[in-house]
Image (tube, rainbow, N blue to C red):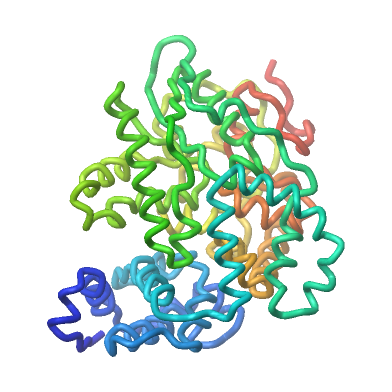
Length: 441
């Protein structure tokens, strides 16, 4: 794609990076076939190619974002299916991130939209605040029907519908500390506690720590780490996102300096995609560029890490049919497609992949709150394809997908690590039947 940025514009490193990305686009349109919003809405401006044109025009002319640009950029899920499809290597992720930051700086949203986004940014990344907000959600649940009738309050209705009726207690394993591996030491890793997942399903990390320590891996929960910054990063709030990233880089650097790390284990693939991008996000910060790059290099999804371990034979026989939902952040963001399925199969599960597995389920961080109608269409499409597999369980590696799919599916939806832990001697995941996976003789 031909560009016409001035030398003064290109002096801005963010603009210069976006210009390089824009020049790689050859207008081929392959991205439209795999874009969930284009498939759903049929509007060229709701495809990656259409958004690229809008972003180019906005940045090239150095103008503030307008309502049309904001509408179509807001509808982007950042699922990154377009990057998997693109034959030219267009880094759409970095381009749309820049566009969102530009929108945040130059566009004044309607009051209710501003308030909603401010509340999300102030609550979701902080577990104690998020937990308190979920407890208060019960007071608003009787008014969901009313909120849904008012367009400006639909995000509030979406939040209330997604809020669980019961909240698990705070996990003691979320506290900073070290969990020793059993038997011969096979490695030392840190684990991300994170934000939303630690409130909605702390058992995911508890299970991960239990399985890894049984395999002889020492697991460190570093002091001072927290939200990866993905939620606010995708809202264009760069200062907050970078502050959260720096905090985590500091926490993990201390853990590295105190005994070394073989990996930083991530159990939410949405977080993993962002943490693996810390090196890019902090590339212009001389105090953090090198440290952030080192952290990004160590970041591993839990299935990515388990795939390189010499695992024992599972203690249960095969049989249970599992529909594996590959989160967008897993398959498109991190390009992890093989390891989770192979681990499940090796552990004794019969793995089935739903049709249209490349399409997003509609969760996408805060998307199911800010764009509830499009999100619901994508969720229902995903659930229909999952249930058509005839599986008994749905496995996935992202808390957002678990919450989204479980809100409409009849099958239990569990994190992949819980099924692996079960097969290797751990407890049965809640809501999963024992039928088909009996103890080995």
